[in-house]
Length: 153
Ligand code: COA
Image 1: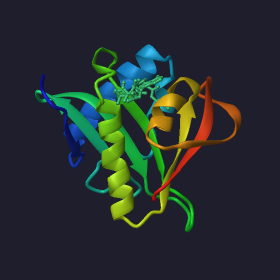
Image 2: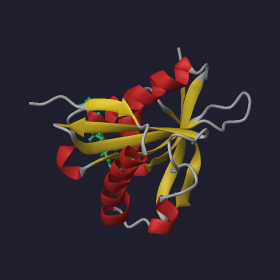
Image 3: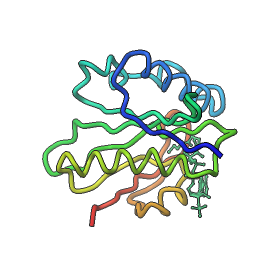
């Protein structure tokens, strides 16, 4: 079985590949409105100072993505979001692989941990990575979420 190749996105073409994955997962599968799915963090990677994105490829084809937002206030954790693996490739560790790449990047940049907004069904996935829930359930894009944090050891 082929391994997932995880790389940081550096070109508009790679960004477009990531958005294809996100459109399939969040817009087509989960019903998130397109207008809410793509935002100011999804701009040309060459000039984007507020987010880094990763792409997971299998035999050259994009199947997974996630992004780390860098505009956390001093003392706050940066946010990982838009974690998506195409449905037919789930359960093979690809979600963990893209998460680990961004966690390593956050650590390298001197952050002390990560925060994220977890869809309720994905809480066990993040708990396996060490994240802990914080606060109540709330709605975002019509989907129930809870905040979760990971403090780096
Ligand atoms: N519920 C419970 N456990 C889950 C899970 C879920 N929804 N998704 C994954 N896991 C578990 C796996 O069983 C695995 O456990 P194991 O190590 O004991 O085998 C572990 O978490 C790692 O799973 P992995 O194979 O890396 O996850 P994945 O590649 O299937 O990706 C998501 C997980 C959540 C990214 C993927 O299901 C997805 O894209 N979902 C739709 C988009 C979405 O909801 N994203 C999250 C928004 S907050």
